[in-house]
Length: 401
Ligand code: AMP
Image 1 (cartoon, rainbow, N blue to C red):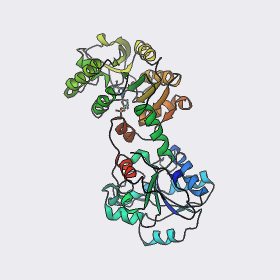
Image 2 (cartoon, rainbow, N blue to C red; image 1 turned 45 degrees about the vertical axis):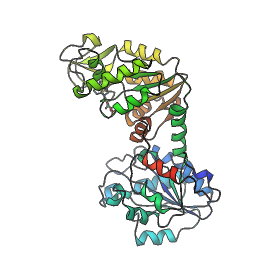
Image 3 (spheres, rainbow, N blue to C red; image 1 turned 90 degrees about the vertical axis):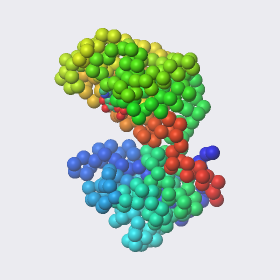
Image 4 (spheres, rainbow, N blue to C red; image 1 turned 180 degrees about the vertical axis):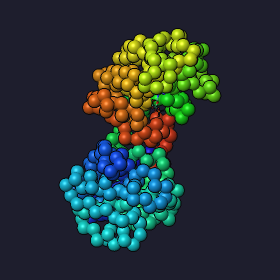
């Protein structure tokens, strides 16, 4: 089943459109937005609704106010930035439900835009409370989900709300995410290569297991590689190993090999005598990591191996850094991998907060086909899960006027 999108609705004129966005932007101590990518990402949807002369209601969460009103997490900075980006007034409502909000929404004219205050000021949001969802939906003719990054959460403004609106569709950001997911996992041009990194195997084992059924090659770097290397009998010193997952890792590795999937692990590393930016470091093969040292980055031979392994790739999916890239001494592997992926001749899809940060720091984002806006949501899609926020849109997809 598929979902419908906002551009499939013929007439938006004068309609109240409730757009769930993810404006959970980073703020500095003075409440200044330090990165407005998430706001820019939904401009196509908002502009489309404004072009259609709709009344646009924007709803989001910001931070973790935990169900209580807390001005520190007000949507005010996001409203201000959106206003600047659209070059248009954006009214910030004092809340997201209630009489005052009703008055403001009732007074909207076509082409107006109102941003509701933080959804998570109410405990009903994270509890997927139907009464709260109903109150949110009360004034909307059309619901649009353009918040891919929260679509793996059954929250009121993502899931329950769709039961109380006549029409529920997705926005253009969501469309992009779905298109690239389709191109990478459902109908990929092969060879399809998955690159996985990051700290731990736990939380990613389902991902590995699902990918084994889909990809042609799997490349594992970062801390998570060491549980696999331990499983294969290597002595990896004090590197990050999740003992309780060694057996699971071995099973996954063997399953991949039985299916004829190429499984690449590091052959060398940058080892350190402590987890510290000023640690003593050396490049060693995996077989020679000193007993009380730890591997914090992939080494040069691994980089050559991984780079060669992606040469014939037509599609690459990547999640997770190759090392502790936050510390300069252990960032080289991740940045070099960014460059290898960016310069490959493949369709490249990257997701997960850290990988995204590394790509931006390396200045290579323009050369990546698509950087997903959803960390957890992206991973759950790759794990083969059905996201609650997408499922409800599928259920409503036949209801278009
Ligand atoms: P994740 O959230 O699982 O994607 O993990 C990202 C984190 O993994 C980053 O903060 C990295 O510093 C960390 N990481 C990557 N490689 C290693 C490693 N070899 N040892 C310890 N931590 C690592």
